[in-house]
Image (tube, rainbow, N blue to C red; front, side, top):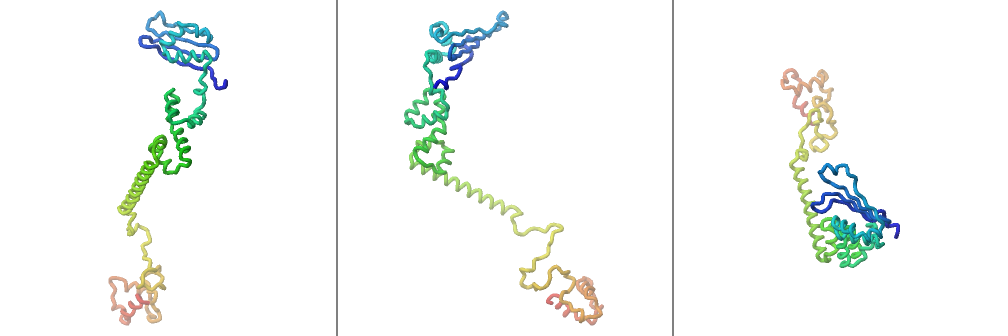
Length: 281
């Protein structure tokens, strides 16, 4: 236990009470008491004054009523009584334990004792109200903690979870589940609305310059799938050049599709038959 005793055992500093603007320092080590003061004043005669200091063994401090009265005026009666106990060898080992060890001890106390312990000091008040302590208390009480309870604890705190009965806890979990489902449903509907409003969400898109605008003929029932769609439409894939040996088929097809085509140039050509062959193979 002696290893828990740090040096100094206690120290504090600060200004004096109203009307006293001097600065003071008070410390208790394992062997002596240290009392220092700095005089603060606008008077030039005190400028450059060195701080005052007194060092006394524990027993001498216990016998010095004047020094005790001065410490009580500056820091209060509670600080004086605590430092006198230290000088008498009454050490508060519990206060010097780490938070991890204290949590292991405190979680085994009764609820009423935890409340009383939290009133003894600022450190125990913070420790007895910590989320870590009440999380351990909930796990010890319910053995297993579901993910929904842990999620609810993030909103209301583990201490509230501990003091809530199971029926009320189920109601809180159900409310949180409904809120989550409504929030998720709203996000999905917002996504669908944006997709409908966005031009990228439509199936029909305008062709961009340079893009391939050829129609996929594989899905058309009235077009011969055996005809290569990538062949120039101005060339008849079913044209038989043997029928018209004196006519260049490329020239004929170009002429047929020209807006100023003159059928008089080809008196022996059956245009209707040729067009039928051109479009029906």
